Length: 386
Image (cartoon, rainbow, N blue to C red; front, top):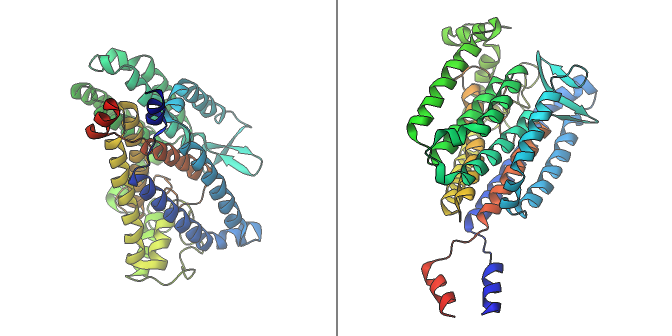
């Protein structure tokens, strides 16, 4: 009986979703390296006299992120959840450090990066994953008291509000929006009372609207977007150039490397607006292929959540899947002019080390969750009889 018991403990099967998520992520990563190679060459030539400067960095980040994916796919997600308090405290500490003059780097009026040798660390990217792990662990521990809002609010929401405040100080409103959308999804999936979710949501909405209209540049950006104004150099300049890129690509595109918009016409062509370059070089076919990959990622991510062996795994899986899906939706919505410019990268594809590494860590955790087999009643009956 002891041998059979040990056999049961060590019997870990990989669900088919594991392979699909890995293959989809690999395809997106390859697409990202190809597109960064194409979109970043003019920037490398202009700023560093080296057309391959950004390409080499992206390859290095891709290798590091793949290593981390494999590492986290082999670590039991329960062990990661056990250090969730440590992770959220480290995240808050990094968010605070980035605001210190001389340590945090200011680019374009925002202080979001910490320069470490050749690498620009963006703490807010890692905070997304840390908050998913932290809140999933909190809800898991307090599952029996889930209907008592005070058991969730303290101390969990104290840490969440501190992190949100520090992100607002950068400022980085889009990251704060993504984080809170994920928080609401986790509370809903975690069976927190709907009236409590609505109450917190209304409070957050009022606060967010006030924050948006607090600064002149944010008001101008919103009004310009709503009025569809903004000529060359105006608030809608990037969106207009993005639409030109997408329109130029037509159905089949102008061909890899043949984009004209990447030559300083479209700012951030290799990061926030790389989807537009995909549309220009590969046309509607290329953009639909990328969108299809993200839809499949969401589908299999949800399947992993539904098959997760416990409450904690379900929450972490849905949180990571939501992060990738929501960030993708926001990025694509910006490039097609559906929402104002937010400065959000396209997961796995846009150039950037922090974003890529944090996303791949999340996928590694998702893969680990998918490894745990839910035994059928027939299997359980067979083992109990043995």
